[in-house]
Each structure stands twice: as structure tokens, then as C-alpha cells.
Length: 270
Ligand SMILES: O=C(O)CCC(=O)C(=O)O
Ligand SMILES: [Fe+2]
Image (spheres, helix red, strand yellow):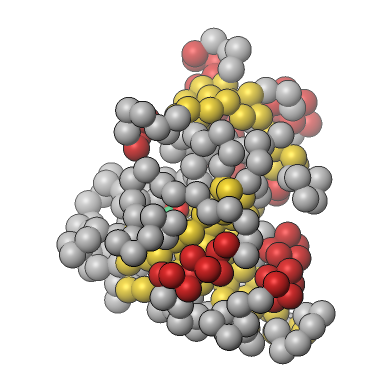
């Protein structure tokens, strides 16, 4: 059932059961103002992911919209030719060749840039060019993941920290230590905050013990019940909250796929 939001012409309907809302009636070129962003921010805190279909934004307009949410971060591996604050996701001029075991950028479950000392709280991904089939992105609700762990595990990981590495993107990219259970700084709700792409070990545990626990947490975190899988349309802008959501770019396509991305800097995870 669609429900009218607080204000204006915005119409909100569920995107998935575990997370996500579809937000229609906004044109971000016309409505790039503080009130619209405040309304979207409240919806994002409630639903963790927003789908805004039909947004015809240039890279620079996407950047301008992103700046309304906070300071933007750059990424060491990829940038758009017009601005370092918009990442250009996709093989330039080449198509991604479907090869089982080989991931495109963003393949594998992760929250964005958790190797950073102040990782992005919000990511926006804007679909510019899509394959005729495949290329969905899956999103998993990490509040649900944390809340459905058994009490003993919740207790055990409650004050643990994990080491995250950025060295997959270059020898000078930073590493960071963050709590395994992150408390959302705006809602106070707890979420699991480890991921298969960047989390290397749990601080203070023996190597095999760390590995066993991490793999158990990774498997639990991506259970299908926690997942919303987004099938993209051109001009979809999807915003998600990296404090509560992990995602996975599914590399099951054989044609060009291009996305523009912005990431909004957060504070130190606690
Ligand atoms: O291309 C995608 O679907 C997602 C890539 C990704 O992980 C990201 O943009 O953070
Ligand atoms: Fe990502």
C-alpha cells in the first residue's frame, strides 16, 4: 500500500519487506532543496534504503544533491572525469565479462569503505547504463542480522573490534579498527558491522577463532530473509544507509553497465 508522506506530493511505498521504500513524486533537479532532503533523510532512517525512480541528473547535479547530505568522500579506485566526488562504476568502454569467481566493483557483501577511519554513512547510486538482463544489486538489513543472532553471540561480540583493510585498493590506502556491533548515531539501533570484502580479523582473538566467528557472522548477515534485491531501471537513484545495510553488486551480466556514485562522509563508527 502506498502512503502519502508528511509533505508535498511525495508518495512512499515499500520496496522490500526487510528494508527499502520507493519514493515517487520528486524530481531532484527541480526539488533540490533543504526541505526535500530533510524529508528524504527521515525516510532513509526509517527504511534504510530509498529508490527514487526517474531521476535525470548529470554527474555534477548528483554531486550538488549529495552535498546537501554532508561532506562527500572520494574513492581511491574510481572517479568520474568531471569531478572526483562522483565515482564512475563500470569498466570504461569495455563490458564486464561474466566469469564465475570474478567480481565487478562492489561484488561481495560489504558496507562501503569500512577501511576508512570515517566511512560513508550514505551512498547514492544512479543508473546510467544497464545490461539487458542481470546486474541487480542486493541489500541486506544489518539491524535484523544483529537482532536475530543468538543471545550468547550478541553478548560475545558486544564489545569486540575488527580490523578492516583498504589495501585491496592500493598500498597507501588506510586500514581501520571499528566495533563489530555498530550503534546507529541517529536512531540508536544496533547493527552488525563486519563484511567479507574488507574485514580481515577480530581484534584479540586467535587467528582460527577469529576466522571461524567471522565466517559465521558473514553467513548469518546475508541470509535471504534480510535481503532486498534491486532490479535497476535507467535513471533510478538508490540511496542507502551504510550504518545499517550491506550490499552486493551481482556480476551476472555480459554487457556494459555504468553507474554514478556519491558517498557521504560519516563520523567514527561507535
Ligand atoms: O554497482 C553496484 O551495484 C554497487 C557497487 C557498489 O558496491 C557501490 O557502489 O558501493
Ligand atoms: Fe559498495
